[in-house]
Image (cartoon, rainbow, N blue to C red; front, side, top):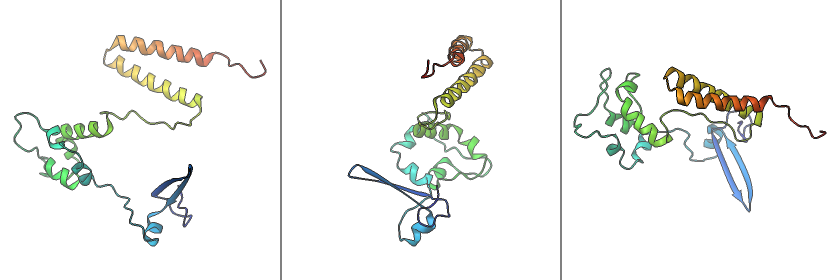
Length: 173
């Protein structure tokens, strides 16, 4: 989205206002927002985010675990990460895998990315996307030898493919 003020830079601030049932959207780049004297911040600090989680420490605790987990490469502890909002190095992702996974599940309500698709996409594009996802799930089930689930997915894929092959009725028919 391009900035509504300067018309050249990428907008990073998006405001929506509803007045008397009419919605108005304004898109502003950070520089124009600063020039206009607004106090918007376009960065996201994970440290601030984690402090908003009530009981995040309890969520991440393992019964009987008293020692703080630290990254073997840089020495950062998870407690330091939750205060700073940034990991110390690439190996921190491995060192804090269990804790990060718990936080991601808490925030995203899932441990894996399931994708997102626009609500206004055409039905044929949506069907093709759904079909690809089912085919990916089928491949994974076969690899994991989950044959009952694989058979169910195979049948679902066949139904969709059969539905897509049927000639569509036109308005003139």
